Length: 173
Image (cartoon, rainbow, N blue to C red; front, top):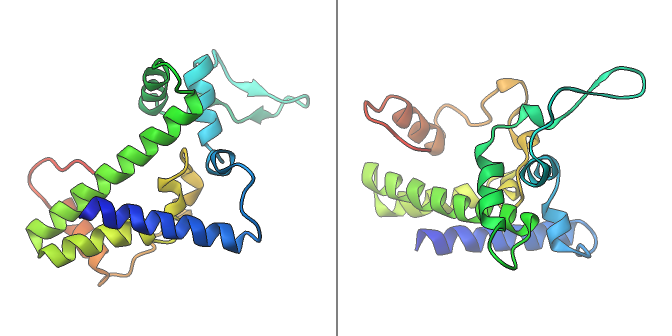
């Protein structure tokens, strides 16, 4: 049930985003492969650069050295399967990871509070502002600016995060 709730919120949000965009995207995959996703796919395809990158003026430019390797490794491994491109692999990994996170968050909410809370967490995880990133390759630009927590102190999700932070056993998030 939590996975179905999460996926339903993702589908509704993607449809609403497409409608707000004025017209549906010509290619949904290109629409989802935005921002940092291109860096991760490039790393999966070509590996990391050997050094820093500079433009014509000598100014330091962005490069793949800023990105952790697990996601590109998973992309490359999945893309080895016949018929799966690196772009397709990136999206599948993002979707599976987000679905697993929604289910685990729901189970945690159910265990700590109630089944209703667990279901609500799965929906909130998929429906929050910026949740498009769960369907896209990856976008660190969706993270809060200035390190400021976007949740209020009494927000149920914030209470859950505080509970996880004070938990005396390993918690995978």
